[in-house]
Image 1 (cartoon, helix red, strand yellow):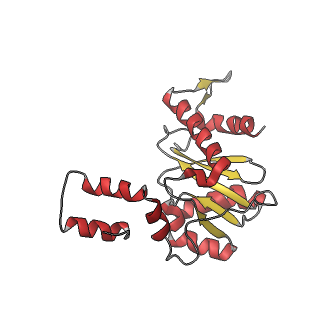
Image 2: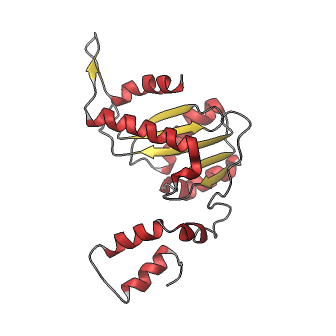
Image 3: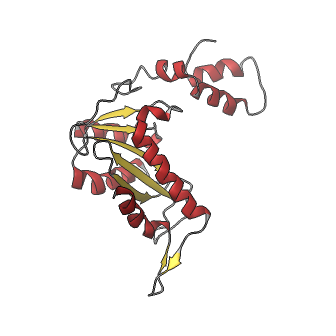
Length: 207
């Protein structure tokens, strides 16, 4: 059947075969095929599989970013996700509470207020092909800012090395907070959950 795109492969299979959960299983199989990951992302304008990531020479010149979703709603805004950003030069991390349902515009504003406004515009952003980054808004935003959007290989997190492991560690911490219902009341009676404790966790991680 060759190494066609996922949509074309599903069309071929649908015309000749069927089994329970075939679409899900076929999609998972395609996403584990390294050749498919390389070949089927050649046609982007200037985006695609990143073969080599040069080491940055300045802070916040290149960053990794990823989302942790499925968190217990916390804080006054009932945040249920967290955007994690790692500076590849200093290995400093920023953790920004957000909502899984946030639009590309919401995420762009969050990024602008917390990263661009204080750290400048990165030259390279490495992510995991989140739909937010493939939206027309994000593409236009990066074109305007002169930022090159780089993608890591799906299902091959070792592409991003240390930064990816840092993100995974923070995800583990956040999920433990939620799994064990970690919250406490301070001396004034205010209840603190993962959202209000996040700045302290971020500080501890960065020092």
